[in-house]
Amino acid sequence: MSADNDYERFLRARREEITDRIGAACRRAGRDPGEVQAIAVSKTVGTEEVLLAWRAGWRAFGENRPQELVRKAEALCGLPEMVGVRFDMIGNLQKNKINQVIGRAALIHSVSSEHLAEAVSTRCEARGLVADVLLEVNVSGEASKSGFSPDELRAAAETVAALPGISVRGLMTMAPAHDADAARRTFSGLRELACELRGRTGLALGTLSCGMSDDFEIAVEEGSTLVRLGRCVFSQGYALGEL
Image (tube, rainbow, N blue to C red; front, side):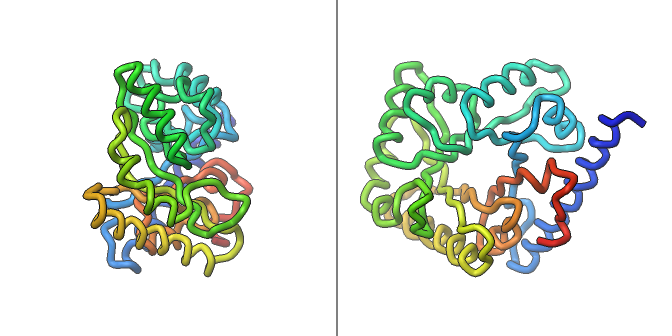
């Protein structure tokens, strides 16, 4: 058996494990597993690994660098077997990189300020596009993390929602690393903020993007609808059983 076949077999088995864990977390929270989507964060792997992940059942991928999103999308989106593949932009987005992302990313997870939302809106309008976006919120308040503070988002939400050229689909956050209690507070805080903003703005905010390899089960228990998984998908050395 070739190395590619071995790796594809690993990817398929790992995906089944992840799907089972998401289902179990949903049951603990009284949720329907159909409410939760997982995307494979492909930022550390090449196009060959993405192709193998597609063959293993993954359909959506996340990139944190615009140039990598462009490179992989151009290499893979035209393949007959990968019709319908989706690439999301999950990393920090600089204004000078917006044009690379719009029209290619199915969803931009990381609109982290009112100014960035306005810039994306302007670029999309100029090209006759509408970008689906999430508003990034720094729920934990860590200085190392970007995003609206909850109070900033409360103040800006209606203005941002009214911008042409973008469609606000929900919220995104990242939790403190290696702290399960802090992660749970962060994810529940995002859920509660979304609930509050729905009442104030009328936006559906149906997507809550939170939870990564080390904490996705907690995120699902607290309401995440979209988990972003990298190491636990692609790394054979990652011990999923130790989550």
